[in-house]
View 1: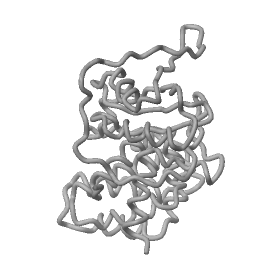
View 2 (view 1 turned 135 degrees about the vertical axis):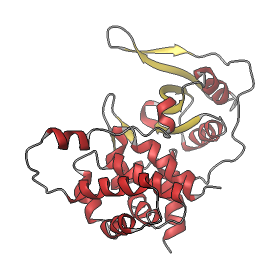
View 3 (view 1 turned 30 degrees about the horizontal axis):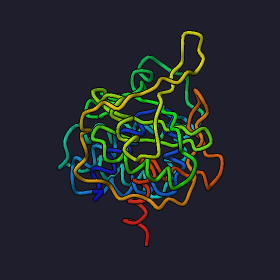
Length: 271
């Protein structure tokens, strides 16, 4: 079962990737949920939530949306004024609050402003030791096959997130750097109806497929799986070398950690 800390840590890891930041803020469940997490009792949840907001605020178009989100600024002010929190939490709350309060047409940048707004990379983010792998999945034709692939990937210990592009039969998987890519192929092959090839670019910049053989060893598996959304909607399309984009409401990523987290937030906070 998902809990608050696991959800916000997954969102933080996704937000650390620049191409995901617009999608997270535009999602109807994630941003309101993050605001509610600012009132959480556990310090580790507060810290991870602030780290997520700091990542999201690095995308300028996100700033006015975040600032106008109901309860955002009030919750940040409350954190700043509390005297029972760690210096890390208080300092990060002040930083996020300051970024959101900056005028729409900011004054010319100074060295001090540049130092304050430089991109953040938090030490406890699992993406510090992660890599992205793009797979072409033979047999990925329908929602049923995607569901089989999702179940197989969710069981692999070391998989952080994944997003499907059904039109091109691809899946982009974020994994720990020490997890062999062949482990993904082994997990997918265990469905008995799907197989995977890795998509890479050669020296000429052209995409090529690299066959992946099953590793022949047992793939480490997660002992607990998160709640998962029903397989009713399509995944968002990712254009090559471009950010994730929502092309239609039906192209929601029910096969990604983002929507799993959003589903948890919706079920938890909306009634």
